[in-house]
Image 1: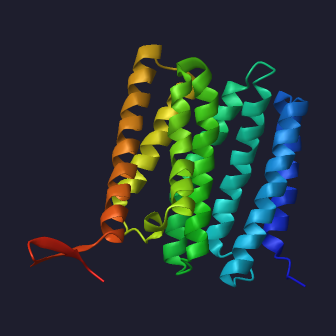
Image 2: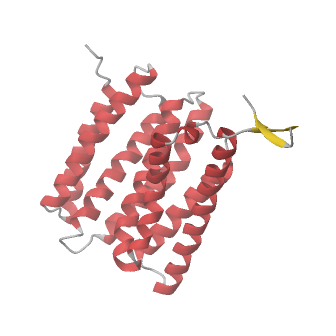
Image 3: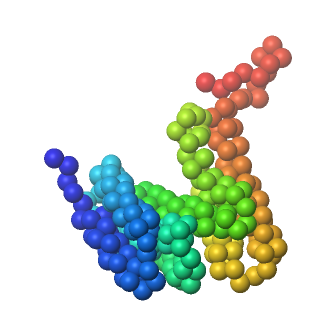
Length: 244
């Protein structure tokens, strides 16, 4: 029988509690509740699988910070889905996203200071960031244009490429620029969500963020292609010979 890890279970029940509190404060319709509960259940299952597949028995110190951020993201997702039928609670959405973005810089510091870095923690952090961008893209797309969904969907298109293409399954080298680009997406999307700037300014910010995202993912795809299709510069009968 597979061991049930307590961390994801605690996170699920915490998610329900925060959803109830936010629902009581700003109101949450049926669609929002359904989205929030579904998010909590799916997240718990995925985290249980992630821990068991890496052989970890519990969260590390930094993982608890990421878990707290994940709970906030779940509430944001519920509010965004709820906004499809009701007036959006923009203040609550923006406030929760800002806190989540601030916490994004905390879990890495905690991991380094406690020497508790792990592959699970890095993936946990990355997927939390990706889902937040997807949710914000869904919200902003209704006013700025559906092309904005490409910002939130690009990470998942990249994953689809990894699952379906052998040469994309290689290991990318660390690159700090990815963190800069990810932060830019979050800032641009939360600014557009808040609506504090003129529409054209928000549109420019989103276009710049999208361009940086295309450059970052494009560079990674090119690197993986070259790494998966290496060639030597040795000429044999006038042709390049693939390296075995």
